[in-house]
Image 1 (cartoon, rainbow, N blue to C red):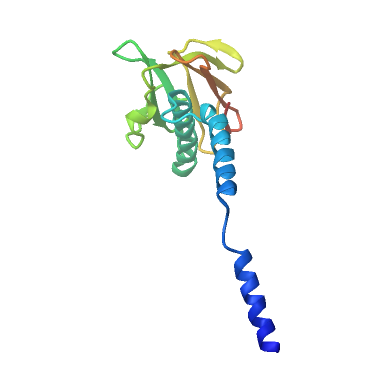
Image 2: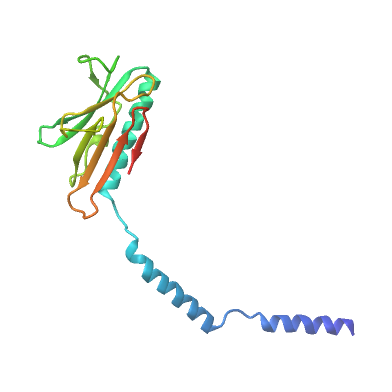
Length: 178
């Protein structure tokens, strides 16, 4: 008799656990579809030129600081007006930040990493909280990783309504992107 009780229990259990009903599956698919329809417009796929350029320039400034400390030399990033009439950046090395001559370009930094995407340009530059020409500024890191001045660099995307991001370099050497 004990044996037949176990058999009935097993059969009863298997009858009740056959899977999901069609209604349950359809409700689940409908809920997932509604959530996807709500979330899809907020998800942006593809390249983000302003964000990409800002983070690339900020990363190069951080790398510049690391190289200055590792090489026990002064490194600076400098803007200038390129042959095409656009603002360009270069990274140079010297013994001291105070040197006016003797700066040499550092070939270990790739030139394309310092270029702006075509729709991105420098909107505003502040050095030590004072406005400065966008094509005539520099910031230098000492061999101890300290910046010689505070720099606020604002980049602009000409083709986007949400078009500004900034890079701030503090005198202690830290770099902040907003």
